[in-house]
Length: 324
Image (tube, rainbow, N blue to C red; front, side, top):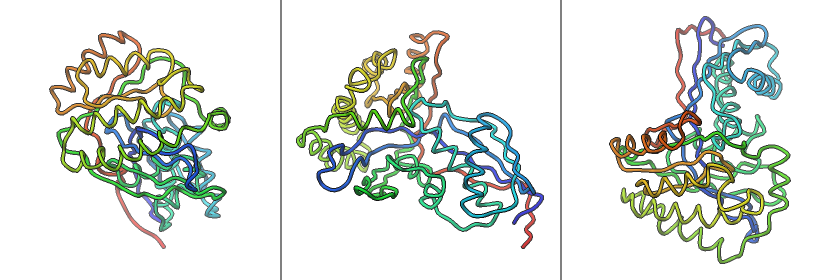
């Protein structure tokens, strides 16, 4: 255990780009593609302590995650945890998974527990449907995960991961609107969704394998964006019975169209929304897009811009001495 030192963990918003398979006919369910945006992000710090104390934004949820980790590893001592900055909740940014993994990683550090991100997710009960947030926390970049086998409690395997070009920028828009589904409501929504056609599932997989990934490897934003937007249209129709259309009702639906009209090469909605995003080539285009979005939103909502992150969560120490 390290004493007299504080560990900090910064985790980044998870953008969910689409689901691979809601049919499960090949033996695996869900799977998906996604990435981490550099903004917004959350920041957690922790230090060793005899008991557990948690302060800051989203402290109640963070305390529940911390206690879950301590119980899982049968740790009798505690920690002083501070949530300095949190992600918007139920907005399609993976706030629960990122907070759970950040707290778990911080506690693993101060209690000298050797672990990996997949094990952290298992301890925290994450990746029970989508593993995108788990793999963006671990590695960043564009990640493709292979889904879960029927009847097994496991994190979907990482099957592809590519870094983003340094000059690409992502504009993330969190409009004021109905929160995205989560928890029991989300599970019920998935249970009610009709199975998509086999043609649609095969088409999405073909787009990912033969257009999206090669375009990213070639730094071809135009082809990447065109494939991403089409994937979002196809998979969005799968969720239309639950969210009222290809994209969530309210401002999200119109913003996706506007982002494309204002020059974004690839657009879509992250998970159930209301967060939407547009990907452009450089800082100047991102700044112009941000101005257009802010003009449309007025005083409501939040807009973030920055690179698509090609590294996982950041972990660092402030002051350090170690006791055994």
